[in-house]
Length: 188
Picture 1 (cartoon, rainbow, N blue to C red):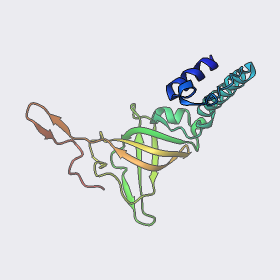
Picture 2: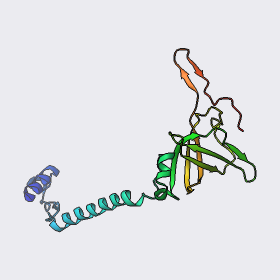
Picture 3: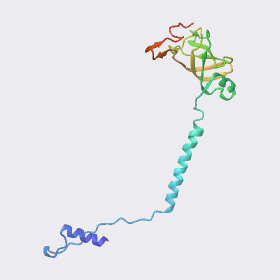
Picture 4: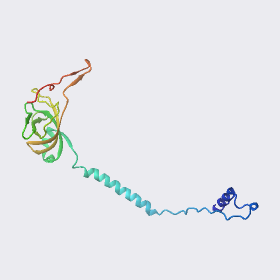
């Protein structure tokens, strides 16, 4: 096949005709040598990909376990406090009316939240000077709050983030916002 290709190339280039003078030597186009691929390289590549995939799966299953944040209601947190002590958790509950207080030295907020049944309570300490505007102490209760932090003991939760649910509701019939129980109420 290589000779035929060389002849065709020579004819196309006008080389090697008798009427034009001495024929030039044919142009040789080097052909790549076909190499047989060893079977070991395919197995090695497959083995490497399997090891890398297994490493990634192991990293996600075991490596990020400590970085996970568990979201739980107050009741469940207190029943699993031994397992979650000192770990970063997110707790959902309702502010106990009359417990929100601000301290100036050190600048912090302290309050208590309770679960759905209202029996178990969790004291929270938030060592920041700013809380969300929607987080208000309402005498009637009903202020839903989510705190993120860690359980220091059975009687203290150290919060690093406080999120309050908005208490206002949109009324589609009147196309207006209905004031919630917590709007416009001062902090105690």
